[in-house]
Length: 275
Ligand SMILES: [Cu+2]
Image (cartoon, rainbow, N blue to C red; front, side, top):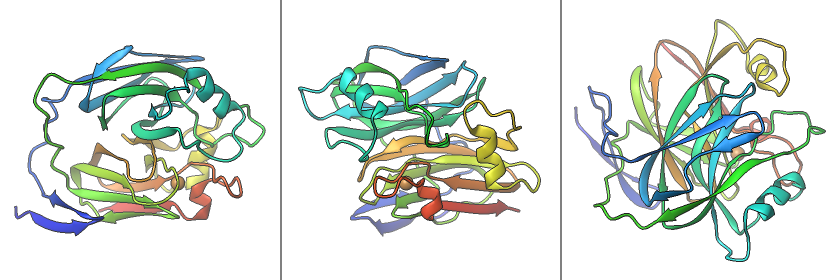
């Protein structure tokens, strides 16, 4: 099928449609494992594009956000302290570079991130689906990204771009049915994340969020798909999702630094149907 060369966000990107699943077999993988109160993974990985896998063996929804430390005086303790005392959004010394979004207990999800050499923190900073009084406890550890010794791998061919900004999620173009690879980019000025779910029957978004809340006894009326942990402005990641016929929702759970409301309440909520 023809590929379109589009001008978008200051750069050219190839958007294509492919009949075969996108290959990411050439990419190195890094696997993180969440259990309750614990996040584990390798201490060191090579730079470049990497398949980030999250295996959630805990009893609650977790994610694995990969964040670069931009200040040599900051470390894991500063990140844990920032998260616990979160009041004014994200510090400028911590750059959210993707990782994997909300993942249900017992599930594994995958996303692709691009990581330059440096010091990173991997954290399951729970998205703000908890009530405001819920303690913000990060499960996190330090990761070093070292220069890769192999040739850089090209980003995956994508079917659509998903742009996150204040306060909307917009597809370019809206993807059709089938296995689709989506490039997710933050074109805004605040940190954004992504929850991507297929809804059961006529379930609503509020029912889904109620089911995902920590300690909830409500059933989760849907399936969480691959999504992105969190992205600072200008950062990007890639996901592949299988869009079978049904209803889908995408939303951002970041808590706004200005008023404390989740971004989806401000408008970062998009539902669509695959016929
Ligand atoms: Cu957001």
